[in-house]
Image (cartoon, rainbow, N blue to C red; front, side, top):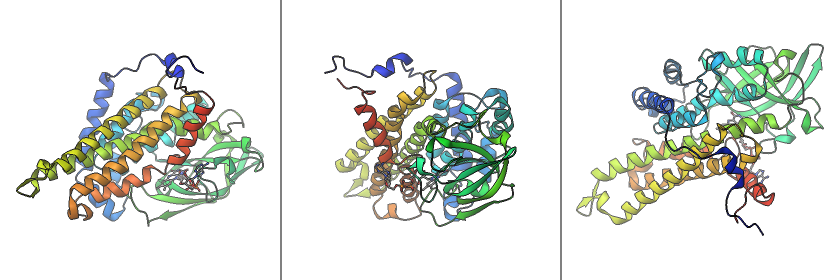
Length: 402
Ligand SMILES: Cc1cc2nc3c(=O)[nH]c(=O)nc-3n(C[C@H](O)[C@H](O)[C@H](O)COP(=O)(O)OP(=O)(O)OC[C@H]3O[C@@H](n4cnc5c(N)ncnc54)[C@H](O)[C@@H]3O)c2cc1C
């Protein structure tokens, strides 16, 4: 029986600081300004048309928000994951697609940041950090989503090049990306032969189809990507040599799980604020809705849920920024992702309920938040997969509750 109570794996990281640094605050304020001035007035239109909001992207670029977690020497801010989570939270209050746009510059480059050579970082991270190019992260396939080890895209060595073939589906920003990190195996029978390659959208043999019929997060296009013997120079194999394996996608996804959670926290904060404003004005039974205790309790529950999720998300983001970030922290990042994204669904639903029939109508943003929130429990590892990670860490005694 364990004799101590606690999380021994957290001790090496020191204590989490609850005070944000000056840099954190500046990034948060910058994101808040873009959110209010550019995103809030446009969010409903972006959802209705499903057109990629290039104006959001340009505003992010001008505010230096695209390279928050990316290395300084190639034009990023190197401000860390907590800074990215703060920025994503601000913009997701108004539009969850905007949160995904900010997250994508990290998702599409973190495999290169963690495992690439210096030359690859300069050539392929710099332009994304500076907002000159757009990127995508291509892992999921028609027959391999959660079961990453089973993916069937292959990379065949041909002289100084690789020929990449396969299909990727549900790829965020696939239809507009200039470059993609594509995961493929050199031996289809061997999961450890998984490697990652940087592919340009202009390379012959690459084709993309946009999936327009989508429930939410309609500001970021989703694509089906086909690679038919796309010739990629060896210099675009991420790392010095083959052998990346599963740590490529897992480290990348782990590093951003709290940031997906931050999209949920922001969305929920936006939904709660909107429902509160509505309830102060809407009258029933002789007074405002806010006089009804049943409605008050809903608001209190939502606030508790949001606060708990925010703490898990900030803690997770902070953990990613510590020098000992690695697989032993995966369960905390999964908890942050699972809890915050499920919380966003609960809060979006309850906030909509406060508006009654009006909540169901497109005149208010809550039905959009409700649709957008649903995406969060599926992407970058489903809620079920996060639980698999957490359960495994309990069973393997990485996480000990005495
Ligand atoms: C809008 C959108 C954007 C996306 N963007 C990207 C992107 O940019 N890049 C990218 O690579 N992918 C992207 N995805 C794909 C997403 O990551 C996958 O859909 C997700 O990982 C689940 O894979 P799947 O759809 O194949 O479901 P499956 O893996 O087939 O899962 C089906 C169901 O079974 C459950 N399940 C599967 N295995 C287990 C298990 N071991 N234990 C318990 N339950 C299990 C799942 O949780 C799910 O409920 C996107 C998806 C969407 C919807």
